[in-house]
Length: 124
Image (cartoon, rainbow, N blue to C red; front, top):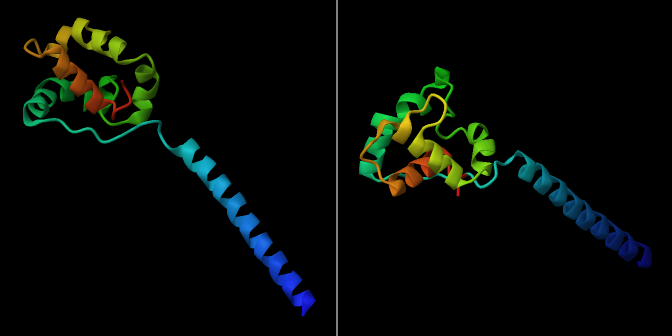
């Protein structure tokens, strides 16, 4: 009887240890594969229209050379520089992007929301 109890305790302990070890490994693999802070960001109707008419021309065309909307890999390094840099690039122009992204009626808040949308929330 004592042997059976000790065997049950050993099996239970091994099962618990394998669960704990397995969870730890899976969590670290998921964290590595998961993009940092990417979230779905939505735009109101006015800003969606701005995106459709001004931003999507380049940020929605794969061969444009511009970082693509919602493609986390395209935005990770850029977003690491911060919202201030991305905002300055959008408002003053950067490389082939014209000043104000061609949207001369857009406000700073419009650009912040559009940048957040295109970067999947990576830019803060």
